[in-house]
Image (cartoon, rainbow, N blue to C red; front, side, top):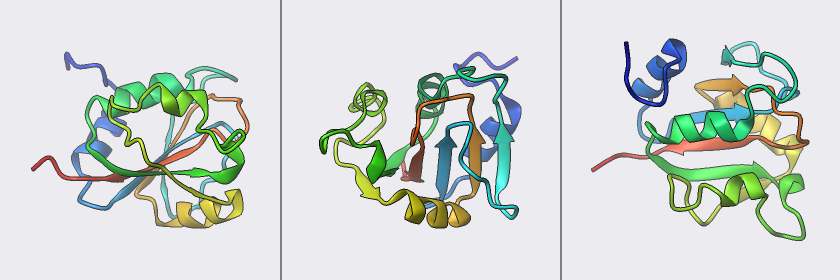
Length: 133
C-alpha cells in the first residue's frame, strides 16, 4: 500500500504521467466536464471531499508551474482563502485569472478534471505542470 498522502490510484497515475505544461483541474461539484477530458470523480456528497483536501493531496505529488482560477473567484481582487492557504506549499504566489466562461473553454485542454464535492461557487483551479529540475 502507498504510504504517501495521495492514495487514489487513478489520480496517482494521472499525476505520474503529466508532462511539462500539462493541465490538471481540481473542480467543484458543478463544473461541467467536457466528454473528451478524463474525469476523476471523487465527489461523495456536497462538501465531501473538499477542494482544499484534494488540493493538499495533489500538491504533495505535483510540481506546479502556473495556476489559473476564474476571475469570479477573486474577492475584491484578492485570492480566495482556499488558494492563499497553499501559497508556498506548492502553489505560486502569482495566479492567472480568466472569466469563468473562458475557464470552461480552457478546461477542454486539460488532461483530467478531478471532481470534488466542493459546494463553493467558482472553487476551481487549473494547475499547469512544471518540472522538478
